[in-house]
Image (cartoon, rainbow, N blue to C red; front, side, top):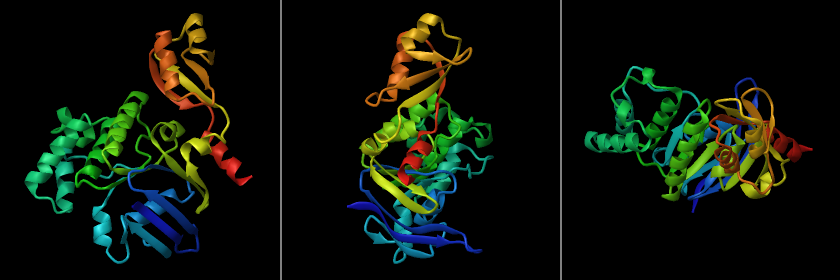
Length: 300
């Protein structure tokens, strides 16, 4: 079965801005799917139409076989959404925030409480369950957004740049949770600017530009079209010459090196080399924007 089918979806805003130009998209049940595109490409508009926050100009959206126009309530119950911006009450506690969301979906208080506790444990927020959300770190707030989106046990989880601003260790921890969630049967749609997330998590992907699909296919096949991968690795301390040699890296400045990966090497290779060299990683970012490069390769 298809978890999500989008057929010829168009959106023209007041003033004549055409955000979507007849987008077609199909996501199979159980897939971990990436939706890529630069800012303004139409990703968020497409997501907001899918979850019923924006009214489309034309086209059709089907969620697990249910037509959104014919039965919007059923389609909304099937979807959990993690938006880019924090939009919970910052003066409430994580447990109350998650339980309240359950109430919006018709869950009784006992079920909502049990589900909230389960999710807060799973996402490493249990010790902060009774702390005001305003006092949480950025990474904890991101995880709270995921817990809230999952409280009603949606079959499709949509993540709109869920790890933006999250440090590398927390990001990898979230990856593991999302892998587990997907393996248990939840279909996941992810938008991100971190291409390593796509490489690590996703099976299939679509690239959109200026409101239109420019390329779709398996992640493995599409990334093979991109150039070699180079990452800037920020370390806790300046590495020695011997450590730089073990990392097979170029030294950029005091605590930053650049690591290049061969086409057949996984992103995890960066961390394996760091472990071998005995250095502590603070963060890893692409040395070049491979999403942009992949973009350009599709439109030239």
